[in-house]
Image (cartoon, helix red, strand yellow):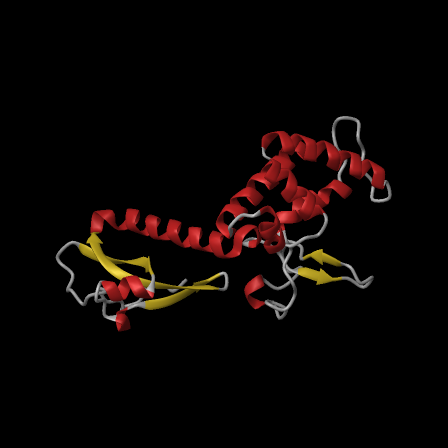
Length: 217
């Protein structure tokens, strides 16, 4: 996100009154044009690879903090909508055996920070929506079921228990986990269960939450 500079101007060129400050507001081009905004006063900012348009509006100084909070919430909602569960995903780093593993969290000088990484936007990203589902194969669970990578029948039994539990809550959640575990992409799953992207992401989040709860609580 851009840092405040001395070149910010009110969207409609109105001068600031005493006690007023400028704060950004997330807008669409159409909305700004509808307000007859001076488009040269708007800025395009970028965060997490997502670009968005902002205009600057005057607010009383005592409302500045609140206005910034509203703006940050709107930006976060936009990023959630555009990036979905993968918003905080890590790069999948190729391994010598041909597999891929998530890039470890930065700890001291173990690797470059994400902003300076030479492989940024080159490696594929970890699919966060599948993280807890993949742990069916690598975690020890309560309830007398211990899972190992070579014990497929145990994994299948655990998956069946999870699906049965989700089925009682919402059949679409059970379907999401089943298809996700089978390797289908989010876009494919949305189409297969008949939901739009926004509703699909909400269902994914709920399926992930309940799966985590099932595995670890």
